[in-house]
Image (cartoon, rainbow, N blue to C red; front, side, top):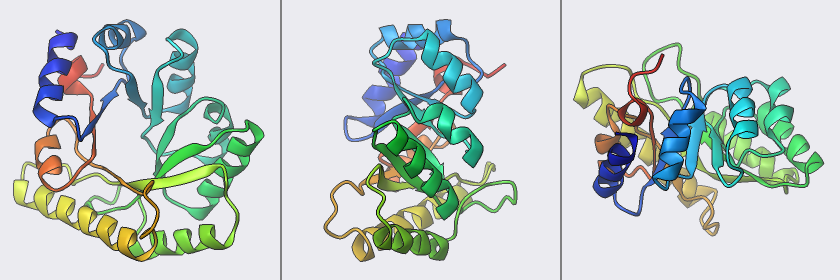
Amino acid sequence: MIQSKIADILQEIGNKVKLIAVSKNNPSAKIVEAYEAGQRIFGENRVQELCGKYEELPKDIEWHLIGHLQKNKVKYIAPFVAWIHSVDSIELLETIQKEAAKNNRTIQVLLQLKVAQEESKFGMTLQEAEALILHTQSNSMPNVLISGIMGMSTHTQNQEIINSEFKTLKNHFDFLKNTCFKNQAEFAEVSMGMSNDYALAIQNGSSMVRIGSLIFGERI
């Protein structure tokens, strides 16, 4: 079932959108099924769970940390994580730089911007993101690569609200691309869209979708 679901999603999204299989709260056996179907990019929300799965599973998996990240936990994932989607402060970015340098690695990061209405959602305002970028341009950070932005829509059935929030997120990306990253090809990713709204996200310019329950079934 997992293999056929992945095949269906890949056919639907096309080759211009990256599929991140969100494996949080799912056992390694299910990840192996997805791996055997050819999936190599997996996303986890929690550092402890991510570290455990990294130890157990094939080393050619590209791991993405997609959940909120505390500074004191960066050191545990810095030796292997490929992408961190949830950079929401200068202090966190500085910590990632420090730990990536210790491991002689470059980690790709996305700036998490808040467009959802819920107070519980993390993320920066556009102005805070601009300040962070300005900080990186005046302080050497050779071990982090800002590769785009990430955001989440409001948890609602109202498609107009979700559509509007995705439009806002893409507009934020375009603004930052044109003002701060005009000549930097690596700033290219918009990570938005999950199992219930990824089609709408792609319509609005998403280049990365984070899909879990649609692949693995409802989480435990």
